[in-house]
Length: 275
Image (cartoon, rainbow, N blue to C red):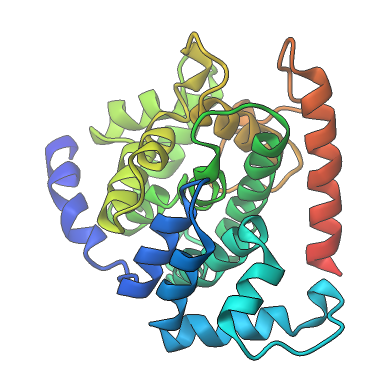
């Protein structure tokens, strides 16, 4: 099984829907903190679907609009880069992930709830702490567990064995997966991110998010992603994970103030999303 699953991963990933060229360009641009508004406008104007979504957002009640925007440039300036990043990623990558078909052990709704919450919290931590590669936080949160889709598709009978091993608490879930399958969901998720040409720092954070606790530097994106994943699991918004991967609080020595502000912002974002 170890060799056969690894060999089948690339074929399974080909079944993931492709991102449009416009979506790939926009995400790549938004993953740079110093991106210029003119560049974003140029990319969006070339993609009618993206242009329509941006204008719809700018004229929606989300921002308490006072007048109607008809220009993409004015809409982008009004929305702002940070807000546009979250919405654009939700339209593109989030939209594709939500359309993955259900199958035994896979639930698109449970996956979406977990991944969106992790994305919001990781992004919030990066807003309040000096995390390197922070512009990729929301994308990394959405993508970090998509590798579990391939495991459900190709080796669903292995999931209970993996969770039982993880429940013993002796080794990380990715070690358990590699023992059983020869590959782990974080590596598969990284491969999916690479398929969509996502930035290198996003791919690396996804690949390392279950190994982040062993890193010497706590200001890496993978570290923030790991903290968010455990906390969201602790809220009960789990997806094919063991209770051993859930935490009730975010313990981050020396970063308590930033963490507290992040959790406050995260709670407000969840309220706004459910309103």
